[in-house]
Amino acid sequence: MKKKVTVLGAGFSGLSAAASLARDGMEVHVLERHHQAGGRARQFDHEGFVFDMGPSWYWMPDVFEAYFARFGHQASDYYDLKRLDPSYQVFFADGDVIQVPASGEEQIELFERYEPGSGRALRKFLSDSQYKYETGMRDFVYKPSHSIMEFADLRILGAMFRLQMFSSLSREVRQLFTHPKLIQILEFPVLFLGAKPEKTPALYSMMNYADLVLGTWYPMGGMHKIVEAMTAVAEEQGVQFHLGQEVTGFEFSGRNMTRVQTTGETYATDAVVNAMDYHHLDQQLLPGQFREYTAAYWDKRVMAPSSLLYYIGVDKKLTGLTHHNLFFDADFGAHAAEIYDHPSWPREPLFYVCCPSVTDPSVAPEGQENLFILIPVAPGLEDTPELHDQYYDLVMERLEQRTGQDVRSHVIYKRSYAHRDFQKDYHAFKGNAYGLANTLFQTAFLKPRMKSRKVDNLWHAGQLTVPGPGVPPSLISGQVAAREVIRTLTPEFRHT
Ligand SMILES: Cc1cc2nc3c(=O)[nH]c(=O)nc-3n(C[C@H](O)[C@H](O)[C@H](O)COP(=O)(O)OP(=O)(O)OC[C@H]3O[C@@H](n4cnc5c(N)ncnc54)[C@H](O)[C@@H]3O)c2cc1C
Image (cartoon, rainbow, N blue to C red; front, side, top):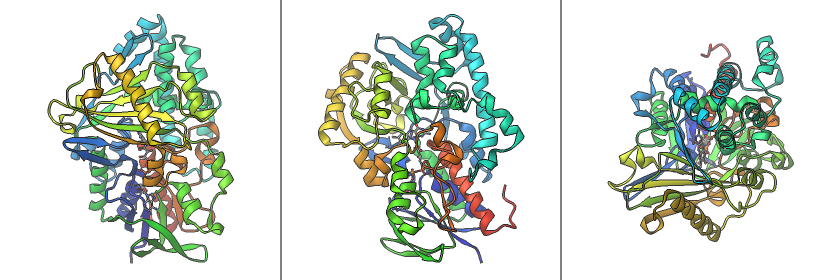
């Protein structure tokens, strides 16, 4: 008899946990409240415009390849991946626009143009960040982080100094570079995905290696292609999907979950992997005695930003935009403080515009443009339709000014999305978009635990536990949780 494992949620972490469990001999049922898999990476369309709802940056292609390889596949079996060049462009307040090229040589030329001598500094910075990336991927991210002892290995301890766990990314960048524009380019990956560069361990300059060396890619058809591919892999392994099923509670026998209840049915289970928002299950669905943490614990977590998003269809082709566009034409420090130090609606936000129709004609009608605009904002803010309108005008004004064209009068479709939508769609704690910030005190075994200490057959996966937020980490999280379940349910099984 196969053991039955129930996976809650069909985002990246749920899909990867499910396929991995099924591959290793479990009977797997995925319960998902939406009628579409993908979670924060769902997709919707409107009269020929195809919008990815969340992630738009395809970074760390090696993680996706390693994932598909476990099932005898490669990404190209499912989608056509293009490397973007330029990777992205950055608009500055003085009217300057920097396009960050894909090639290493051209990146060095670019840095030298802004700060003579910085080409050498960039080589050193990227060589250090390569070491961090490779060490991190090999020795850290695939660990369940149940305890500090997993890291008490001489090789890992020896690496700690070079990994720069205890100094900040901001410090590392400023030791090597002085030009403010170069500093902004090197600090942006962590600001958008987690925490202020001063609060982020320099370890995370591994993200700069991902950005500048491994490159920015795009799956033709949109990021949802990854979801479709992972769903196909899971189905091939025998996973059974139950979409449109809202998980509402559990039945227990002693310290074990025996059944999962949804609005429609109950499912008998031998083990559960929670790949929904951790806080939702812990604080809203579990009875008090089975909760891993207190409300006060959750309140103290430093969350990554939420986002105010706009999905926009434009009835003409635009000029001056590349696929990814960062509008850094406002005060970086002031906006970061409004996200992290005194959470409030930003006065002059930085924002990001994705225009996938520059690369991919399938996401907009011919001769038209698909825009996705993201303003990072503090989690836990009250969002109202009036605020959505106000910020729409603000970002459109700057987009029009910087690119020198009228956009607003050509907008034929517009939808906005923020905190309340994240709460309604995902039960997101404080309306968070990308989970927990990557601060030192929220790294590895200091994050919410993957293995429940109160329920013997419950594990967690996803962006609120290890290794952290982002598509590749969520996908890894599901794999690691699956491995832990297999180790417990079938200790004789040798997991790869
Ligand atoms: C706007 C935005 C932009 C982003 N940009 C990027 C990017 O460019 N690159 C990148 O790498 N990452 C990006 N991220 C982060 C990345 O998308 C997430 O870290 C990742 O998708 C999280 O996956 P997950 O499986 O942990 O959670 P989710 O995707 O949230 O999946 C959880 C699932 O659980 C389901 N669920 C919740 N409650 C219930 C319930 N009671 N019953 C049944 N089902 C339930 C939800 O519907 C959802 O499908 C972005 C995120 C957002 C929001």
